[in-house]
Length: 170
Image 1 (cartoon, rainbow, N blue to C red):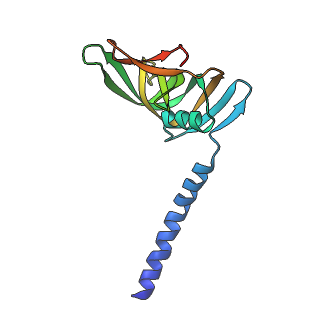
Image 2 (image 1 turned 90 degrees about the vertical axis):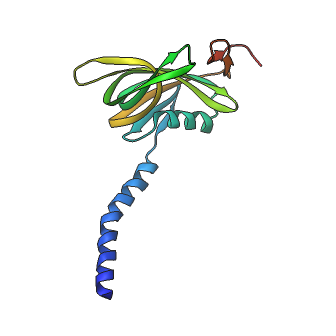
Image 3 (image 1 turned 135 degrees about the vertical axis):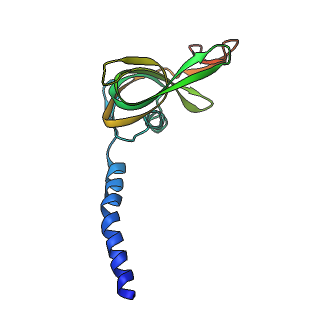
């Protein structure tokens, strides 16, 4: 009975070691580099696009920025319903991110993203609008973040009921 336990333990370790090694390697992969205009980011399968952009803004203390990108994603878009002041969501799996654009500002001492995009499916149908979430699908996503020297904030504006980029100084 003891030898069966050891055998099962060794077998389990043999199966899990490569998986654990992949996870360690995956987290060690560099996600961005500094370039003259700002940062070049390359995200890989499973990465949360919004989380990585927010982390970059916090870590590098980016005052404000704009960004563009492309790649492969699973995307959640939202159409702003002016009556309910909420986004009506729609999700798209395994699509090509033909265009990504957005801005980074600050709200309540946290990064605030405003992101739009266009995705295409295998039939070359395009869908786009306000992105609520995106994770990297098969392949990667490349994002160029252009940093601006002025800190910008987002503020809730009424009666619209939406966060708007504020160009006025504090």
